[in-house]
Image (cartoon, rainbow, N blue to C red; front, top):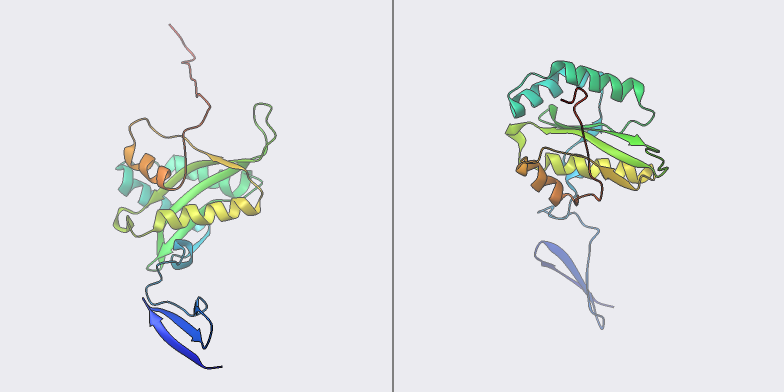
Length: 186
């Protein structure tokens, strides 16, 4: 048999005499279009030493110092939850984004495993570079391994940028209605 190779849009194509062309997907492609963001951007488990970076990223995003919130969240994530699913993305040898989530195996009489996405942040200098998508992709992969069925989160009504990002990540409105009441009602 005679084998002839060509390249089509940077993808090697092999043709064996008398047979149809076959694309060789085993060869690395120059444009890495199909590569997952989590494969291109290192994502790892959150560590206590990440706390200053998380606070700095959040301060750059929100313009507010929420150090006590992050100290409490990191302590909760690392020492109080049974399942660790909080992650940090790194580029240029430093944390550039994070996602904090927990797994609930029951609430309000429901026993289905469900994750709650508490906080997500990406350094403004790294927005539109795939950091948020890499974090969400790795989070979903980790949750799949844990056999979690759903992820829920909530956001401010007018946080359109975050809403658009979550929409691109496959989030949809829930059938739940969140209610609240002031404790000291008039």
